Every structure is written in structure tokens, then in C-alpha cells.
Image 1: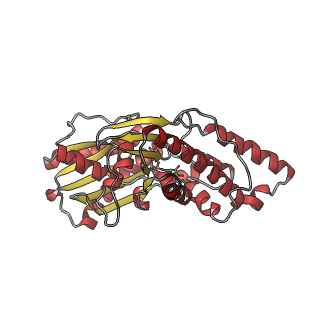
Image 2: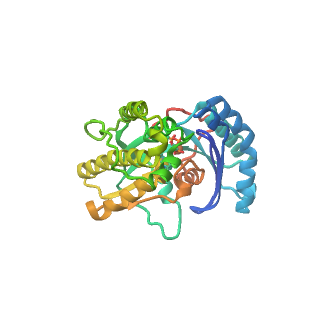
Image 3: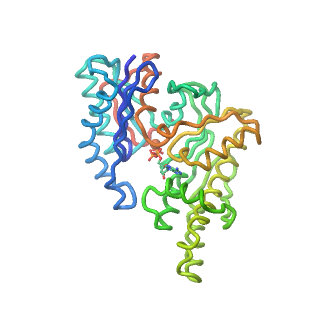
Length: 335
Ligand code: ATP
Ligand code: FE
């Protein structure tokens, strides 16, 4: 089975070719234009997708050494994401599937962040059903009980900002550019995580909240800068380490609760923030601390990519779960 997958939900144009669950190629073209604006500008993202999609798909096929005529199906991200961005990938996938006379398969981006764990890879274990997945990304923060490839229950989620936004907005306050997650991760390694204390939000149950943390960090920095104008430059590593430590603490506390409430010990993470070194280590520590069995994705499958769309395409192909030609992109698609 050969699947060509297309991902265009936000600001990365991505295409991948998969053979029987193995990745043959996984191309991501990240749009640089948004850095200037400190965030994704939807109209510019959509236009850049239009420019990138043909070369990115060509490159994915070429790298895989696969001809269009060999393809079994075309998979694409139907949502959630930015409407203008989703429309580019959706229309492209529809025309290609129609032109080649092969099935079209729609994929939920958040399910794909989770099912990335089912990509065939040497030395990577797949989680057994049911398991817990925490999706931590630029637009989402969810704890999901994964019962099967297609049946998933969201048992907790953020009531305001996503964890990726907490990283990006804190980084913006520190002048770290966009997206700031990777920069905070890097600087945090050089700092002491216990230097500054930020109070954790009090949200009951399995839900998250990150907007209060962002405000707390803003006030803290404003106050310190008043006393010492060079406060940020002089303490950047410790500030980053402390912010990251606080965020990881929030995530791990909720995972502990979710594991206790569901009795599930197999725990996977997915989404862009799962690239973070600190959260990866904290999860591994959970193995001996709490008896967890953890699943941490390869770096290339954490931030947006089309390999994760391809694996869902592959699994749905096996089930004959095809989309109709009139399927529509859906910016608020639920898991
Ligand atoms: P969603 O998947 O919710 O639709 P998205 O697709 O925009 O959102 P992803 O590409 O999955 O998001 O993740 C992007 C986010 O991951 C950004 O907020 C970015 O700062 C964050 N991120 C990436 N690498 C790291 C890292 N090493 N540490 C912390 N955050 C990171
Ligand atoms: Fe994503």
C-alpha cells in the first residue's frame, strides 16, 4: 500500500510518502514569512501553501522513488486548523485523487499527532490499546483516552491558551522571536529551573489553563525590569528554565491524575511541544517514579509533518474508510 499524504493545517506545507506503514519520504517546508510578524498570519500562510504545495509533493514523490501511478490513496488533513490553509491541501488532495482515480482519505490532525506512534520504525514500540495520550501543541492541550485507531475520548483539555502558546507568548515577552518553544528549550538547559517560582493555575480535574501563567510572567518581568533594566538579559537562562519547569510541572500533575483516574499506565505524548527536552525527560522519569510505560515520538514526528497524516491514511485505507469528493475542510474538527 502506497499512501501520499498532505498536511497544510497551519504554517508548514508538508507531504510524505508511506509504504505499508513505513515512511519513504517526509518533506516539510516551514514558512519563514511569519517570523517577521511574531505569529502566523492566516492570509500569508494560505498564499505560501499555494506556492509550496506542488514542489513539496513532487519532492516527496521523488525522494521516495515512487511514481504517482503506484499510489493506493491520497490522505489529507481535513482539520482542525486555519481555514485558508486547510483549503489548499484539501482541494489539492481532492483533484489529485480524482485525477488518478484512487481513494481520498480525510485525516483529523489531532488524531494524527497521536497515531504518529503507529508509524513503522525500528526500535520504537507501539502503545497497546487503551492508552493515554497527551497532545501538547501550538493550538491544543488535551488528555485523550485512546481506545482504538478511530475511537478516542478527550478526558481533559485547556480552558484557554494551549501549552505551545504559553511557550510562544512567554518567549515573546523575553524577545525570543517566533515560535519561541525551541529557543526556551535550548536556553533552559543552561539555567537553574528553581530560581524563579511561578504559581501553577488552580484548575480542577483534568482540564488545563495557561493564560494566568502568561500574565504572571508578564507582571514578574515588568516588576523586575523596573528594579534592574538588564534583568532579562542577565537572567535569561534561569528565567527560561523556571518557566519550562513550571509548565512541565503542570503537565505532569495532570497526567498523574489522569493515570490514577483511568488506571492506565501506558502514556504517549504528541504534538510540537513533545519535542521539548524537559517534558521528554519528565515523562521518562515517570517510568520509575509512577510505574508508567511511556511513548515518546521521534523528533521529526512531533511538530507538524505529513508522515503522521500518512499513517492515519494507511490505517483508514485498511478499513476502507474513504472520504467522498464533496468532503469539506473543517477548521474546528473535533477528535
Ligand atoms: P495544533 O497541532 O494544535 O493544530 P500546530 O500544528 O500549530 O497546532 P505544532 O506544530 O504541533 O502546532 O506545534 C507547534 C508548537 O510547538 C509551537 O507552539 C512551538 O513553540 C512548540 N514547540 C516546538 N518545539 C518545541 C520545544 N522544543 N519546546 C517547547 N515547545 C516547542
Ligand atoms: Fe499540529
